[in-house]
Amino acid sequence: MQKQDLKIYNTLSRELEKFEPIHEGHVGMYVCGPTVYNNAHLGNCRTYISFDVIYRYLLHCGYKVRYVRNITDAGHLENDADEGEDKIGKKAKLEQLEPMEIVQRYTLDFHHVLELFNTIPPSIEPTATGHIIEQIEMTKTILENGFAYEKNGTIYFDVEKFSKQNNYTILSGRNLDELLNNTRELGGQEDKNGRLDFALWIKAKPESIMRWQSPWGDGFPGWHIECSAMSSKYLGNEFDIHGGGMDLIPTHHTNEVAQNIACHQKSPARFWIHTNMLTVNGQKMSKSLGNSFLPLELFSGNHKLLDKGYSPMTVRFFMLQAHYRSTLDFSNEALQAAEKGFVRLMNTMKLIDGLKTSEQTTSNVKLLTSNIYDAMNSDFNSPIVLAHLFEGVRMINAVHIGTEKISIEDKNSLSKLMNDFVFDILGLKEENAVNTDKIDGLMQMIFHIRNNAKTNKDFKTSDEIRDELKRLGFEIKDGKEGTSYTITN
Ligand code: AMP
Ligand code: ZN
Image (cartoon, rainbow, N blue to C red; front, side, top):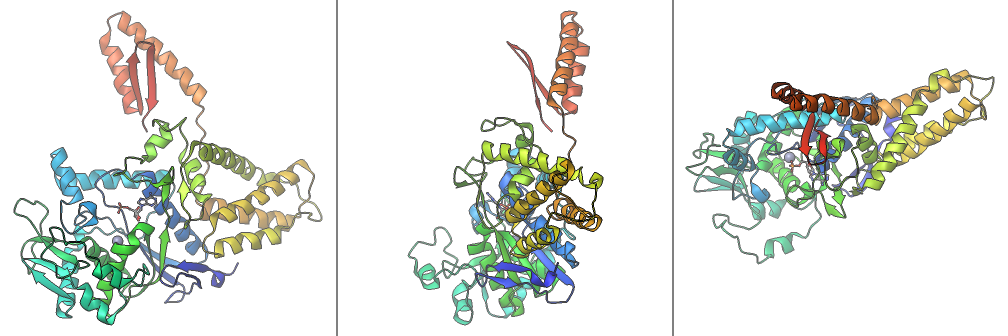
């Protein structure tokens, strides 16, 4: 395995490029984290699972990786715009809670879900509100450098001025003149000089509870400056990898690059990695389109589009079957196939240690090893890696039933290869398969006891049973046809 063979598709150049870190042996990687105003949906999870595999492979290659993934807990307005309500503030109002209660609830949910998917936590997880000072400082420097202007307590980035000396659309490859000359009205954003200008700092409305002091009065940071400030604080003005979903390219990441150049005269990252979307019937999964699945709905099968529940590792396996730059369409059939594939892989992994060895080998372990590394080095191509791992599965089963032979050296190499890739790099893990028939039997027995209690007017016991089941994650429903249950966690 040669880590110097790793090639990554760089959105900046739109080409596969050889990966070489700025500081030998060290990699700095920043990935835009979630805005914690609701439960992370499966699409969000796809992006973080993709970066988890990238992180794991970089670690496997021996790099010391500093992986920074932020939490956006303020400044992200509705429609990703500079006007409108803060997503978190809005939810807080709706639920009559403090914004920080919303942040806490959904940060915990995010961590819980990513843990179920067996992702490794980042090395640093900074919050936007914990870095207001850095964001104000950066805004001040951009103002001093002449790339921003103030209007009524809001600071805007001057895109037209910036683009006279720099390529503003370098990431998206869009035509700047078309964007600038687009005749669309500024639409309630008359304070801006140009329609591409965006806010670095936004004046708080009198009623807004999300506000911080600044040299320009009370306000809050723009979403884009948050990531610029946090990435440069922890990774320096120039680092190796910046990532996020593809939907962030035209605005959020384009603006991050502009801010960093306007502040530090340096583009932040050498490599920009963008993950493609999880789709449902070809449409991006998103909360606002109403086609999103929550991971817990998928695990329990408690969703109108699902035939049954799927375990977290089945879902992770399903996601790995697509390359991170391709879209992945959600379907029951694909999940069922993934479930079969995952079980077969796990069952085969248990056979490796017990394989009998021979004098010679009939299987080509060397070729398999190089095929697997080649696929991974070719922009983390997990579907090809999986296809080759199944060649490994075939070999192991063939040796197990005696139709092929393996030497002790090859058995050790094959065991290391399979274990490294299946568990350490792709991040799959053995799951205790829950025997649903047994659970069903137990539940029927409990319902019987509860019904007897009810018949005897012992409602204390019947309620206790219901509450305790709820605490354990079983929601029960009394209906005309008896009692049914759903697993909620
Ligand atoms: P947000 O919390 O909306 O800022 O999104 C968090 C991350 O999830 C971003 O990197 C988005 O690009 C990514 N994302 C959102 N929707 C999807 C989707 N359907 N498929 C894959 N990634 C997504
Ligand atoms: Zn970001």
